[in-house]
Image (cartoon, rainbow, N blue to C red; front, side, top):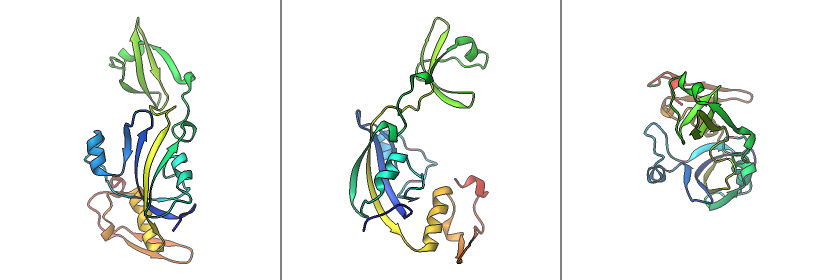
Length: 199
């Protein structure tokens, strides 16, 4: 069965940099551990998404349309449909003093936030600090190993999937869902924590 834009599916994937094979994202716990990406607070397993709704990277989202449920695929995503091409205008030179006045002593590789934007320090010399505001994967061709595990057709299960997407730590057994003709009523019931902390 092929999937189309607007379908709700469960997706397993592993994203790698084509040139190096470095894993940068995965839904598999074991792969995350092997790649040094494992986070104890993360929730692993096939993720529910709506195809074409922007829940995953643009190029991956587009490539999922027309794939078959249960088959494994390797998809190549060019930079412009991944994290964008490298923009050399996003490499800036700042003074060392700008960092020191905030108690930051920069070194190459340090990730910093400047004016609400993430950047990586490229070099430090002669009182100058070169920083790169490009995404670390900008300019890279990506490879995704994907499997659409299931297509979710039942409206209540679709709603549960979307709740799981936005609130992965929610106790789904305590959530009651009613689907009407024009509305959906969701009762979260008693959760272990405040709903805003379930993500």
